[in-house]
Image (tube, rainbow, N blue to C red; front, side, top):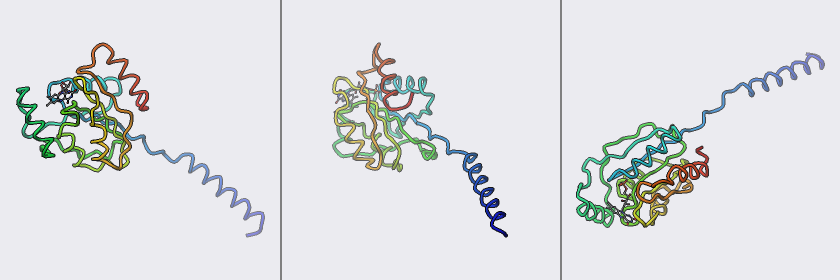
Length: 187
Ligand SMILES: Cc1cc2nc3c(=O)[nH]c(=O)nc-3n(C[C@H](O)[C@H](O)[C@H](O)COP(=O)(O)O)c2cc1C
């Protein structure tokens, strides 16, 4: 091959490489999944509203042995579970968590922290590299210690801006969700 033919071949190969690089399909952006636990329905309502805004997939954590429907009994059961670091068994299993890049994690503030079913969920799967975006319904204690409890359970995951919602959120819920989702790049 003479010098001129070599240069032409080299240029053609480079151009083809460029074209190939441009037309290579880029990896699809990973989706967000809403996962929540709710005892009296407030977190469920907020989670559904987030789904209607974002179109994200959604799953409610369900227990093999649910907490009592009696408020005072539930308070006792939840406190006992928290003290003994119980991991109540979930009915759910998630086989496709690899499809998701972020988890919008919803729960009620229970005894100033997460309900133990949230700990079961976080310990059951590998969340390394996935963003966790907490949202918490509360009766006055806001997020309590819940965010640090989550961070301890999944040390390889960035925890993004959390949202606390008073009970079901009232009239400002739509605006609060809008601002929070925008902050977290989900709108
Ligand atoms: C077992 C239990 C413990 C709770 N502990 C707290 C608490 O420490 N601080 C607080 O602000 N609210 C507390 N609450 C109130 C709930 O966070 C609040 O009612 C919330 O809206 C319930 O959400 P849910 O309807 O999704 O279950 C507690 C409620 C229950 C049932």
